[in-house]
Image (cartoon, rainbow, N blue to C red; front, side, top):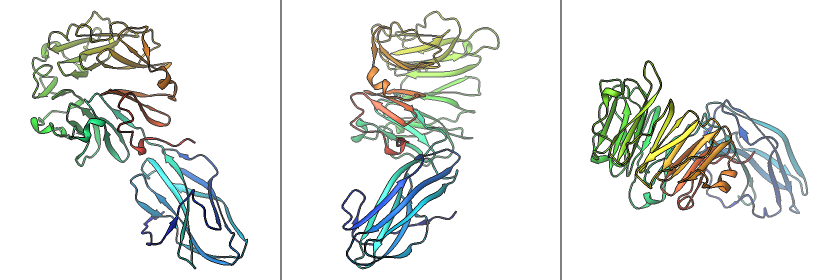
Length: 410
C-alpha cells in the first residue's frame, strides 16, 4: 500500500458536526475502532445524499490523519453526479491498517467537494492503533513522560516556565531506559554507553561513560545505573547524598536500583541465599527494616519501600514515609512519594497515605480498566490502563495527558 501526502486546496470547508447545506454526508465505523498491534481492517460505510433542488457534480476522496498530524491520501478523488434527491451509498469498506503503521490515535476523514461552488464537506471518526506497549515514566519534580512507537513525549505544569526536562528532547534511537530528575530527564539508547540527558539542569553534569548500563534512575540532581564494571552501580551528578559511598563490597549482583533526593538503594540478588536491600546517603533515610527476601524496591522524596514476601514495607525520614501498608494480593510493583504509596497487585491498584487504613484515590482508581503501570510525580499520579494513560491529582488538569496516549473507546 502506498500513501501520498495530501495538500488540501485553499477552499472553504464545512466540517463534521456543522450543517451540511443540503448535502447529507455520513462516514460511520461499522466495527471496532481499535486496531491490534499486528494490524487489521478499519471497517466503515459511506453515504452522500443530494438534498439540493438541482443535480450536483461532486468529487469525493478519503484520507487519514496520522498521530503526528500528517495527512495522507487513501485513494485518488472520484467524480460522481448526483441527481436531485439521489443518495449514493458505499457500504462495507475495509481499509487495511498494516502492522508497520505507528501506534496512536488516527482520524479517518471522508471529504467531498461540490464542483459548482468549490466547497469541501467533511465527515470523520477517530480510531486507535494499539501500541506494542506504552511505557510510563514518573518520579520527576514536575514532569511525566511516556514512550510509544512515535517516541517520547513529556508533560507537566511547572515546565511552562523553564525546561524541567519536558521539552527539547534530543533525537533518540531504540530507547531502552528513561529516568526523570529535578529539572532534567535522561535516556539510555540500545548499544550506547553514555546517557543522553536534556533539560535546564542537565548542563550541570557530564554524562559518564558506562559499561553496559541498565536500570537507570534519576532524582534531585543525580542519576544512578547498574553497570558491568567493578563498582556494580555507578552514580553521578552534583548532589552527593545518594551518589557517593556506594556500598560496592556488599553488592555482588544488584538487580534493581532506586534513588531519591537524599539517598539511593539497591536490591541485590546474591549467588546464594536470599535477596537483600542496601541503601546509602543521608543517615535519616537509609535505615532499612529487617526483611526476608525482597523482590522490588522504590524510592521517592524522603521515603523508600520494598516488596518482601508479599508485603509492602517502607522506611525513611520520621514522619515522611508510609508507616504501615494495607494487605495486598501478590503485589508486583510499588511507587512512593513522601507518605504516599501505590501498589499493583492481583486486584488492581491500591494507594494509601501514611497508614494502612488511610486508603486514598478510590474514586479515581475505580475509573481505571486493568491498570498495568503507575507513577507518582509532582502533585499528580498517572497510570496506564486499557484506554491509555490517565492522570489525577491537583496538577493533572494543568497540563493534560497528550492526546496520542489516550485511546478512544471501542
